[in-house]
Image (cartoon, rainbow, N blue to C red):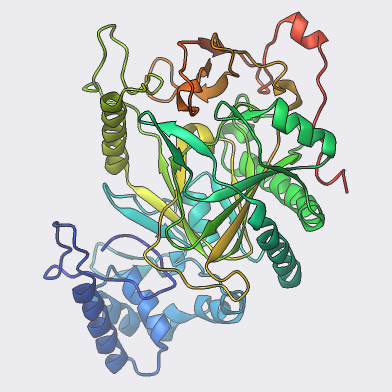
Length: 484
């Protein structure tokens, strides 16, 4: 059985009912199999609730025999107190709790034993998607923290209504791919605090090598919520440093300063087909090891993540010995396809994790996320409409633009465009280093140059500029909370 945790009835496969390899899902067969297994357990344990039996069946990898043995040997003990706690707290919040309390192992004498704790997260299988819902499972398997029911219900709905109204002003950004101009598969807008920052965002800051045209001033609710986002994100940063990072110390290049959101990207996904492909967020103004707070409102969607897999020794190189996968994407159609196919093959070898983001959930993407992982919102076959948003999902990504990375300081390409900051991810000898590169080849109507420059940062992630840049003091962006 694929390792996953689901609020819906999972599809449990048996040795006789395996998933076909011809692209079909085999959903009907596996669904019937799950119903049959559940019916057998219900007939054997009629006093046990159906959802409890389903949890035990999932924890036993779909084995009716193992589930029956566990229930018979331990009686109702296995269903309490965790089940009672879930019934009183989890159900009221509408959040799936972890199945870790139901994990069972077989001892040397063949007796099934319940484990109250688990040290290792479930394995991600090649070519498979591991679905996670519970906060503890997500924190154990990814560089993310999720907080369900983040805002009071009325405040979350007020922000949702406000941004749904704002979304009529959102637009699709354009970029160049295979020598063709294409549009993003969802709409978006950038929000800043003041009118002066609006001028800066449309005439100095760039995204993907182009100046932004769709910038708006932060709304009342957006500013109000940012204060709680700031407090929560900072608390989660400190918690992760203490509990996860080696020696209880921040990562190299991670800023020791308080995280202060001073810009927000607001995205609207209207319907199940709207999406965004696998990517890492641009580091140009965020700097190394940035933290992003992402608030989801409206329709629940899947947030897919996967590790950046290092290239194998068999990866192809060009005539100069440079890896094709490490180079800036070529405008050549064949080279771009080769790059895409090789990257997809590596991603399939690693597998994916799906984090389900319900209405009013805050996802904190921690400091290692952008350098070591990629993320996406994938198209969905169907979605469950939200009573306020209908088929739409609103997503706010609160970001901290560093003062030391103002566009007046960052390098310019030979073609006159702003260079963007990227992290080397493929070659072993350069993995983890940062570089300034040209991105003009992705800008409609532009041709890129071969500009390249290694980026130098101190241990706190601030760039090592020359004295001229240090003397040229650029304006800073206002913290959303401070601008209320």
